[in-house]
Image (cartoon, rainbow, N blue to C red; front, side, top):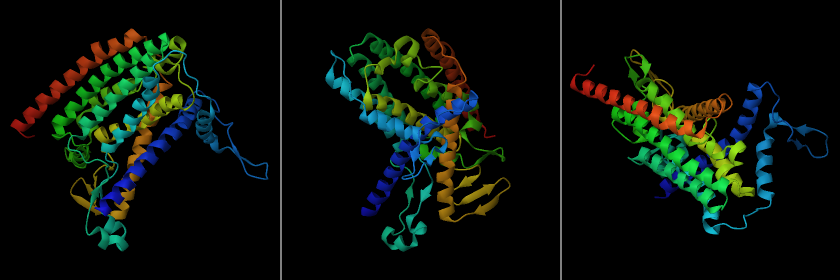
Length: 382
């Protein structure tokens, strides 16, 4: 139907615009947050001059992201003398595209009723409602891991096709590291699947609108605090950021698997990394922080402990859910950048040993305990 097409085109435009904005903004956050942590001023040299005046708009260095984009677009695209041209050209897109696709199954708001939000179009929409999610898949969480696994192929393609020993070593490191930590991520979310009984991300968020013990919000982090720590650690490692940035270790491999890339091809690799920070933030928010809702919030308003209801208009609920989701994602992104500037880099053998000898057993232990507790709860509800 035309109405459905219009709504989903709006959702797609919103998602792409949000991810691109986050990718650009996080380059500034990385610089400024590092500067604050290091007691420095940070990026403040790029500016826009008001025409016919000497007034320079610096805006705390926000123009540096724009300057970086322009620089990537106008730089010369150097290529190696000996390389696999097809795999070399495809690799950046195999890394970049799945990162965007992952957001297609993440709910960024509750139920949208366009007729109530815009009364002038009520007759046209005829009572149709839409969950604020691009792809409403029952197996949404499985699609997250399917798409994220594709980026592993892109990193290995880039390293192999460049015909450079440093790139090849970086690609091998990236592949083994990402596969190792993706396994840990999968095991950590299995506990949530047991608790919520679904792999539908929208269903998981709706179930987090209730309470635990009558007071605590029924967020994933309340049910699975240990899994939340494991998930965040594994997600940072899969994104190949310090202290797990061994595939791109500058002091050892120059730039790792994308050493031979320049101009916008290199920009795609770097931009994908920052967008993936936002994707990790969105996934962590959806799985562990109640998604787009505040504590005790649902699509009709709030239900406080004790049974007190606070009704809100549909427009207020929609705007609140969109803003709450963005704020939560931004806070999780800032935490990832905080970790990046706080911890030293591991050795590569330590990175893999940490995954297989430490995090994997802990993830299995957490899953086993969760399975036993869920079974006991089903036998005798608490």
